[in-house]
Image 1 (cartoon, helix red, strand yellow):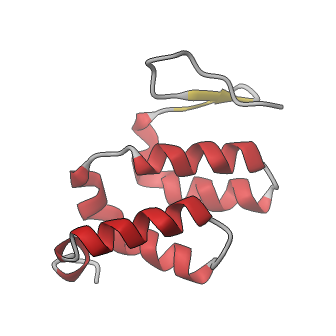
Image 2 (image 1 turned 135 degrees about the horizontal axis):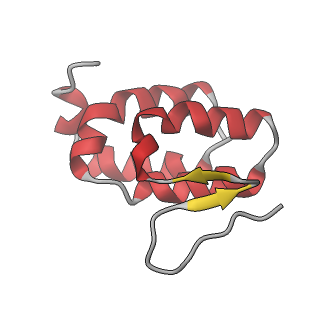
Length: 100
């Protein structure tokens, strides 16, 4: 089953479940669940979605995302690269985080 989406929209329908920007607070949990259920296409889509989210969202969730990636080394390669990029470019996002 392939995720579907329309050009210009943030969102994806996967097996009748719509993934959109309103679920930002649960993206990490959804990503882990998709990986556990071997929904590789959804995992790839969610990784791509996370890399396009706002700077403010990254300020709020960055440390949790980094910790999840660290615990699942090699599983979420796109996010590993993204976090390395963000940490290198803006280390204060992590250093000044209230969840650090």
